[in-house]
Amino acid sequence: MLYTAFILGLLGSFHCIGMCGPIAFVLPLDRSSKTKMVFQTFLYHFGRLLTYAIIGLVFGMIGKGLYLAGFQQRLSILMGVIMILTIIVPVNYFNRFQITKPLYKIIGKVKQQLGLYLNKKSNKSIFLIGFFNGFLPCGLVYMALIGSIATSNATNGAIYMFLFGLGTVPMMSAAVLAGNFLKVSIRNKIQKAIPVFVVIIGLLFILRGLGLGIPYISPSDAKLQISNNAAACE
Image (cartoon, rainbow, N blue to C red; front, side, top):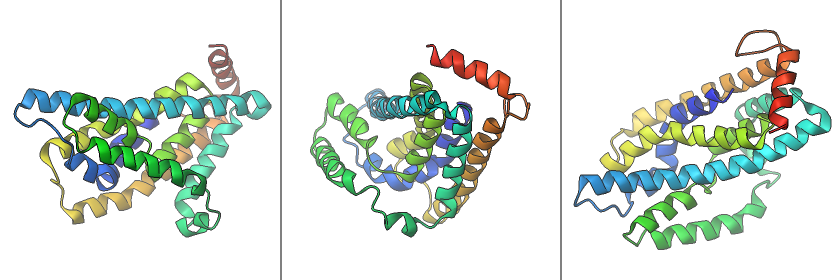
């Protein structure tokens, strides 16, 4: 199911332009040379992907703990259901519980660091902008993290988030190098389609957990158990 991470990142990158685009548009790149611009854009993405991989590693470990506790492949069903619910249930409902309130102070510090490095022109600052950018709250990232938990493995969790980030690279690179090149109307249409793809990915996770014997999509319980046991031994 790792391929779903790249698809989510690729399709959701239009959403990323809306959320992280403002940062991408004002990156302090050295525009005196195309080579330097491309290299610094790479550094920005490398910083983001490194952060995603680290977070994925942590959430993959959480998934492994749940797997060892006896959830096994049913964890995949649970994560798929949660992914779909986050799309169906209104955001205002979740806001009542103030789930992210404890993170506000951390997010504030991250934004402070971003502000400092956005005023500096160096390869190090470009990398750190990408690194801290990866910690900013984003609904799409949360969806990917749910997927990383479902991998039930720390390594796969890191790979899942890395592939998610990799999927966002083409569009985000275009945003960095070409600026705000998409019309607002087009971005709005694409963003409306993103929830549909998230639901599809959620359904794929549910199918995977059901073990219906469909190759690559819903392998049998026995094959999935062997795969999970092998991953747990790594």
